[in-house]
Image 1 (cartoon, rainbow, N blue to C red):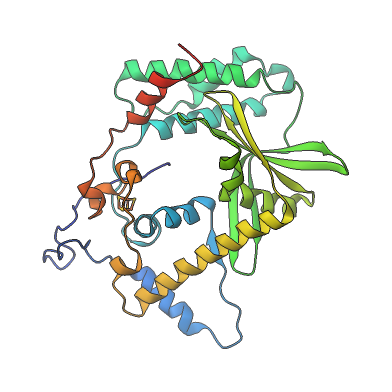
Image 2: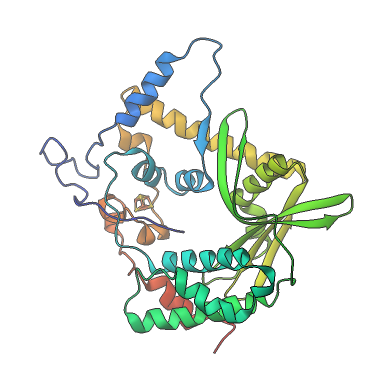
Length: 327
Ligand code: SF4
């Protein structure tokens, strides 16, 4: 999870009225978004097509994880203040950009020796406990990259690197940035594969690849953008050098799209309920769980503020302590 953080006011502190918020309720947001939802509905005429729900995988994922987190991140304005940056997000961004820049090099300059400079050039320093930890993580990440590029076919050019793909359905206007899109030989000609890099501590398996809504939506979109079959989705876990893969069928991709549309309908219904006078806290309830400790909005959330927060560097601490492939 790539989380967010807290606001200047804590849960239960006074809202814009200056009065304390009722226990267990966050201050009512300036729900300009709710007004807009209502206006949009009023502008519609019978028989007019519904406005498409513009989304990315993270937007849909945020709502599925916790409707309240979705509201904090995408609706409340001014947005609640987030907590400090997370080291694991810095690490993920650094490694992703280094790999992107690797592919930007001419093929004959893609040598492992280039990786140190690439990683240094993209290194994000935020969130680490201290320089010692940061240095240890840098060394570990460089090792992952060196091992990983050793598995790549020399001279093989991806079809896209950090490539945005977009598609419209009856409900969604979806767009997302795929880490990599490969073109590979298939039985009836070239086929596409979606590759997603992972840098978290735990390894991943085929169920993770199969169940990933984001990967399925990328595949669905890529197939339409490039007009080539795209059924293969892969999670490349850099810390262990493993690949978790799944081959979708048109039916399984369609199912994932239907689920995404269902989520979009739920979000729109919640926004409309608020526009019609429902309490935003009821329309976008909290979902308590272990993820609260990692949530950017924990300190402003009445549920999250009851949970012990994680240190910004906690995930990379665990990562460097427990890498199963290295001593
Ligand atoms: S702290 Fe937990 S309940 Fe609150 S918004 Fe974040 S994930 Fe949701």
